[in-house]
Each structure stands twice: as structure tokens, then as C-alpha cells.
Length: 358
Image (cartoon, rainbow, N blue to C red; front, side):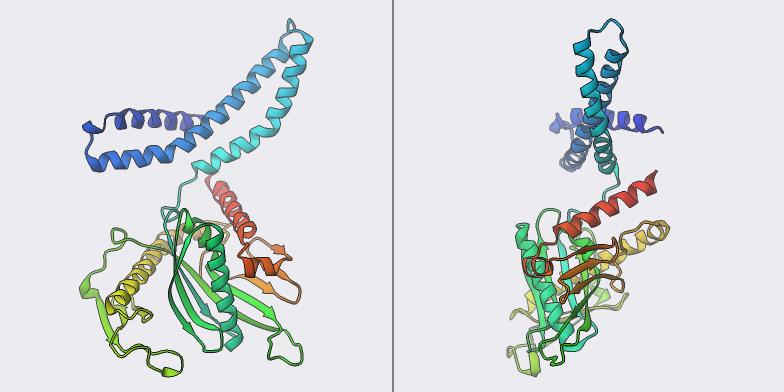
């Protein structure tokens, strides 16, 4: 099917759906909801198609004026100027259209579960994990997203062994998904008297928050243990068995929650994380074959992949997937100003997928 034929088919489909949803009484509730969502998803694409077709039609009109020997000079001058402008803007309009036609990641509109863990580097890695976690909290605030801390396991010295949060808002996973992987830091620890730069790391995982309709978990597949919560150094957090550990027997995935005083709340949080991990594992399995064939892939989201380095002595942040380096580490780490990096990653991913679809 040619590109133009595909565009005409989409316009026709949009028109058919519009007719159907104009009479809700003739549709069942579920069918009306499904078609309304499909119509809503198609509408911006149709707007891009109309903009593209209008620009092409305007170009033809300008070319016809320039080719007409009977046309007066002023009209030809105007047509020539307009044609020059259209030749500059048409490629961008076409690019926007092609990007809007790319298959959508069904998880893009979902909320996200963020997990940050200290890697190699001892206490320095734990301190870095804490700063990364706070960086994402600031980034969420910048976008008006809700950042709900689910659990924190601290070292007692200011660092985090691991921490997790539920981030909710519009298009959270679409922007956050590129953050999964190994983040490396290079800096001089405060305890280092010789001024030697140390390298340590933390791993970040961003999971799409799964609903019960996405992943059904059978009770028979779970082993649930309850125990008394403990804090740093082993001191008692409370005097009841409120901490919960859930093991998903088929996969061996284990989730533990103890931040809430209520056993039921800890269980609910643990199930939410477990559901999201299972959903992400299912997505990864489905995407594996396609990802293996993609040459220009931005990143697989694999937690073992080193994606970014934060070099404090040089005030440098480098994203290794797109060879992008910015010399403003304070704004990025302290203020959560990640948009320039994330937008570049989104653009690179779109370019790779466009190349793959051609």
C-alpha cells in the first residue's frame, strides 16, 4: 500500500468512527468507549494528514501559477515566495505526520514505578542513589506529576540502598522509560582526603504501572510472608507483624514492603510493584525479537546497560546512547532539568523506528 493510500484509508476510517459514535444509543457502552478512544487517538493524526495535504496542494497551486505565461508578474512573485516557504516547511510537516503514524507503545500513557538501587561503590554509591532518586522527584514536580514514595531502605549515613516511588501523571512512562539502566558517577567523596576521583554506580528501573486488567495474579502462585518491620541497624520500627514479603512462585520475583504500619497497605503496595514487574517482563519478552533486529535502538531498558555518566569535577553529564554531553550537572541533578536529554532520547527513538518502518 502506498503512503498516500494509507493516509486516505485513515481519513475514511476516522469518518466512519465519527458516524458511529454520533449515535451512542446504537452502540453498547463498552463499544462506545472503545470507539471514542480510537477516534480520539486518530484525530491528531488526521489533523496532521490535512496539514500535509494542504501544504502539498498549495505547492501545486504555486507551481501552476509560475508555469502560467498569462499570469501577471506580481502574482508570480507572491507564488515564488510562498513556494520557497513551503519547500522549507513541508519536510517538517511530513516528519510530524510520519512520527504520528508510528505504532504507539501501549504503556506510554501509563503511570510508572521507579526503582533506584545502589550499585558498586559502597556508601558513595548509596549517596549517589539518593541523589538520583531526589533528581527524579524534582523532575516529577517540574512536570506537575505526583511522586509518591513507596519504600526507602537507607544506610543511616544519608544514602539509599534502594528506594521506590509511584509516579502518576500524563504520559509519565513515555518520558521516564528511557531512564532504565546503569547510571555512573565520578566525583571526589567528602571522606577522600587526597582528592582522588571515585567511580560508583546505581541502577534505575522504570516500570509501567500495571492494572489488574493488564496482569492477573493467581493466589496459588503467591507465597506471602508477614514479619516485624525493622529499620537501619535492626531496631524495631513497630511492634506488629506489618511487613510483607511476596514471592511469585512461577517467576521467583520477590517484593518486600514495610514502610506502612498497616499490613494491608504494605501488601497492596507489594502487589502493585509485583504486577508492574510481571507486566514489564511480559512486554520485554514480546519486544525481544523486534528489539534484536533494530540497529539504531536507543536503549533496551536493560538494567545492566550503562546509559549515563555524571562527572562532578567537570560538571559534565554524558548520555552514552546518543553521545550527548551537557556541562550543567547542578541543574540536572539538583533541579531535575532532564528535559533536554529526554527529548533527545525520544527524538532518537522516533528516528530509529521511522528508519525501521521504511
